[in-house]
Each structure stands twice: as structure tokens, then as C-alpha cells.
Image (cartoon, rainbow, N blue to C red; front, side):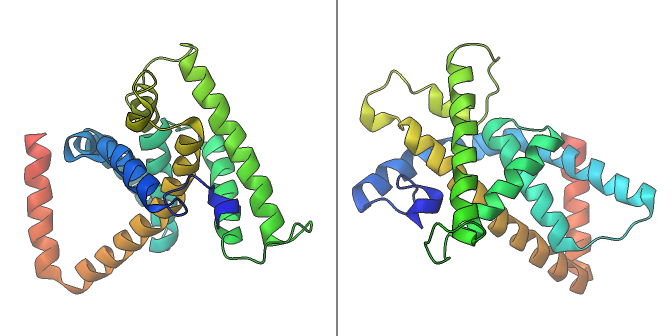
Length: 212
């Protein structure tokens, strides 16, 4: 697994490192930080739902949830919104995910081989992104990556190394997409089967919308 997601991933590090990395990773995901992303995600979701309505198309809920979860996570973590780039990263992340529990043999065509190659492409992409932000060529985005790089001048115990940042960017994308999409799918199923709960949620959401 470490070959795929990285030796510095939360999924692979020893207890002491796990505790430190988890603490530093959790700060950008506080309720205050997440609340700033709610409006953006709501706009993203509404736009895509309107497109389905205009086109008169049906869709598979899990497929839709997987795609919008991935896009939202990449936006939150790295402010990536370009459709072509998102699909390239998604394909590479899928190959890495498929390699995690595959037989570890570097033979062309195998899941493991494809996954390691995909990981290398992702790490190079993340490395270039970090270098570009440090150079000052990009405006502050206020995303997860910015919050990690703002710690550059802090003691080692209070910041993540580049390897830790990159391995855990990959980990957060892979883990976050699957769990978020599954939660969305089951929530929709529950609401479809419980119209009373659906109506209460609808009233609550409309009320929140007016407050915003």
C-alpha cells in the first residue's frame, strides 16, 4: 500500500508520526474552514443539477456523487477546477487506488504497474504546484495547500515536509471521494424512502438559503 499512496501517508506511518500528521492535517478542516466552502459547493451542485434538468437526462446517483465529490475535493485541497486537468488527475487516482491491494509486481499492463506510474505523474504534478506557489507566481487561494505552505517557517513539528504534503494530498483525494460519494448515495436513498424527513430537510435548506 505504501508504494501506491506513499510512505508518508496517514495510512502507512508509525503511531507518533500519525498523530503529528493527523493534527496538522485536521486544522484546515475545522468547521470554520469548511463553512467557507459550503457556498461554493452548493453553487457547483446546483449548476450540475440544473444542467441535468435542462437536458432532460437521468443519471446514476453513485456515478454523479463520485464525480462531484472528486471535483469538490480537488477544489478544496488545491483550487483545481479545470475540467481536463480534473479528469487526468481522477484517472491517475483511480489507477493508484486499484494498485493499493494488487500483487506488487512491476510488469507492464498490471494494476500495480499502472498505479505506480500514475502515482509518479501525480507526485510530479503536486511538486510543480508546490514550487509554483512558493515562487510567488500564484495568488493566494486560501485552500488546503496554501494552509500547509504557510507553515514553511515553523519548526519541523509544526509543519509537514513536501513528501508528507504530497502523499497526504493523494490520500485525502482517494479516501475522501469514496466515503463522501457513498454517504451522498445512502442519504439520497434514505430521503427517497422517507418523505417526511425529506420535507423537513427541504424546509431547513430553504431557510438556510434565505439567511445566506
